[in-house]
Length: 150
Image 1 (cartoon, rainbow, N blue to C red):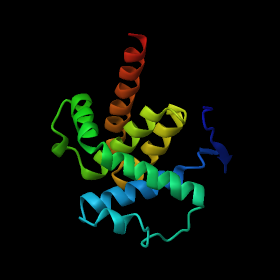
Image 2: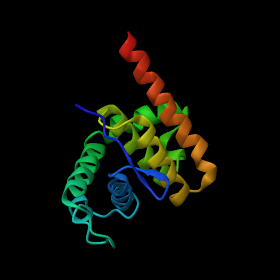
Image 3: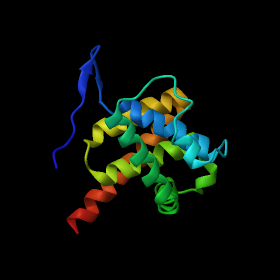
C-alpha cells in the first residue's frame, strides 16, 4: 500500500484528508461530551462545508474505528501520558485517539498526521497543549518502531 502524500496549498503542506480529520474530531467530541448518539453524529447534519464522498467515507471509517477501539486507545494514551485519561481534556483525548488509529494504520506518513493533529490542537485547545500532544504521538511512533524491531 502506498503512502499518501499531501499537497501544497498557499505554501502550507495540506493533506487531502485534513478536513476529514477535523470533522472526525468534531463528531467524536459530540459523541463524548454532548452525548449525541453515534448514528446522529455520523449524519454530519451540523457540517457547514460539504465533504467529497471519499473524504466522508474516510471520516466515517476513522470515527467507527476510534469507537470500536475506544478502551484500548484510552489505555495506550494513559500509558504514554503517564496519567489517568480523565485528566486529559476531552478534545485532546479525541485528537490522540485519531492519531493512534491513523498511526497504527500506516497509510499516511506520520509527519502529515502529526502536523494535521497539532494544527487541530492549536485550533481547538490552544498552543499550550501542542507539546503534550506532540510528545504522546512521538512516543507512540517510537514504541511502534521498537516493537517492529523485536
